[in-house]
Image (cartoon, rainbow, N blue to C red):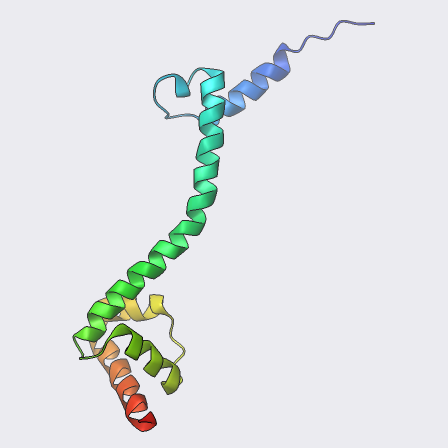
Length: 121
């Protein structure tokens, strides 16, 4: 039986890991065992944080909206309740952008919400 030399496959595997570990510090970039562990851990963090990013942005939009509607004498929870009752289908991302970049349009939305809240009283 012919002899099988495996250096080519190992080099290919190592190059792939070192490519993914490019830019890491110390032995994490050039020692295979450390690089492999670092790449695996980085992948876990990336997977987790792609989900956490959605959570973090939603929290940010809520904080921005709360600050914006308090300037119009409402609280966030009352505003969201009124938004439901008024039938406006605007999400938190759009509303927070609107409050920062187009305050006059946001003020008209708040007025519509206030009118819907007055109707239901």
